[in-house]
Image (cartoon, rainbow, N blue to C red; front, side, top):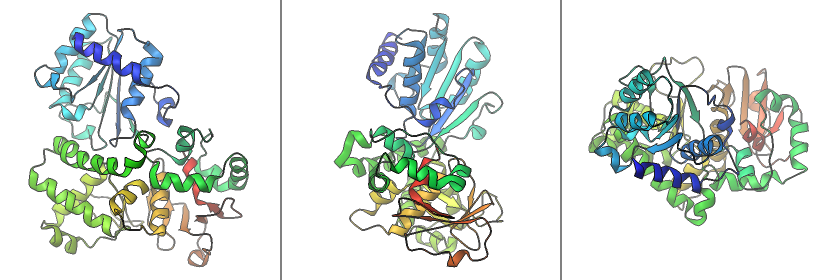
Length: 398
């Protein structure tokens, strides 16, 4: 136990309070049981440590545990937290829960047994509370941590600190917002840097090795995280890697399920399952046609890599199509709070209300003729006009 306390204290010493992710202030930290999911590398661990340091300092009222510690191969989580609580502990923060077998059962038992104990746990994006063996869904307040927005990137990079804008504000007041922001910074200059290498908070730590680190993250997600959560065998892991590779070669990918399943060597239904696993893990975004069924076996209309940095990393030395970069950025930022689908005209329809065509600065409204509530989201423009909005401004949604 002493070793675990020392490790927790050491992690607290290392964490900075200078920059906090958008989710920090959205969480009701007073809840007894909180769950936080998110893709590997988005900052879940830092979020936990920042709250501990702010609320408890270095007191032993709170304890940070990571379940990928070898300690938990020989010791039960329940017994460790029981000892902590009986010795005066108030709140425990359990990281990497997907690395521990039957984690949900032990957390449920802890929650039911020790009424005065608060528990916060975090794990992979692929972590499904509804599939957990214990019924946590009625007990837990769940949150999801998305990748850095362009707004957050600007703050983390010490370029400027700005308040987030909701979609209605961007649509109705994008000229005022654009003018205000552009008076402080050159948004397009920083936007291009973000698109290439600013989506994950660790970009400032690795710099030249950033894309190499991203490729390692992809490997860990598939071979460790997904394998642990879904109990995947080696053959399935290989097919997941192959599926992701084929998608990356031609995004935005309009899937021909029969053709793709033949290339990978799996049935249609199994291929769709692989696609959903990759989406749950935060590696791809699947977008359906407006009005399409929502069943698990329904194929998506288009598939994108999750964000522009994954797109750049997986392209290797090949130049990435700028149009693909634009669409990937837009869909990534919008899905954090909104529902996106593929409409009959335009690139995306958001919340079944607003239709957007994404393009370069010379794009016209030709493809949106007659479409109500339609807008252009254009790259390489600093300020918009009428229903033409700068693409970079959608990076201020959270």
